[in-house]
Image 1 (spheres, rainbow, N blue to C red):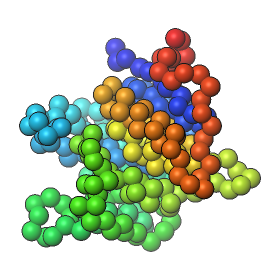
Image 2 (image 1 turned 120 degrees about the vertical axis):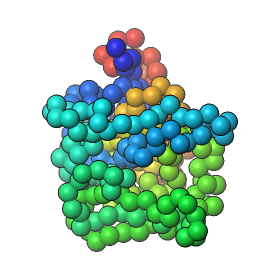
Image 3 (image 1 turned 180 degrees about the vertical axis):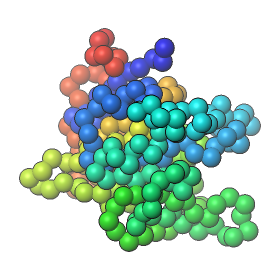
Length: 242
């Protein structure tokens, strides 16, 4: 049985360790989903610079959606929140979108890796592009702790296109069911949003918990951070028992 764990890092900031297909049906509906599923990795990434291949080999044919159909589950996300942003959406059988988000990495066309990454959205906007020199992106991500880690500034840019809430409306809740090292959570709390994250791998869950906690401790200027949690984090499992 997969070990589950829940940590409340601040008021409105909660992360879960476990299978998102099991945890998502137990959660309240979020205002927006912003996520980066594990697409196209295979066994090609040499993690940590040590030459060891990653064991994270995502096979969509082995996964099921929450309603039991044999699909990779990502398609089910498009109806799970009013606003949805899915990085790598071009790898999945998603419906046509008016607004794709484009991360232009500024790479020369002689590079063998992709010059851009695409995010599918259900937003009613024109296509938007984020241009960021790859060297700057690498600097922002050092040390790189996850094979598909993205720059915090890129995720803050993504959140800019989702509804922020108003002075008379609570901050919107951002959900990331494939949390990884927690970059979406870092961006969310720095922008004063609520956040719920799910990650199946304990190593990355612990990294995400640390990175989001650090972001809560050092909020961006002029942004009201979520209130700190009253109970110690890391002492409760998914059932709430110590």
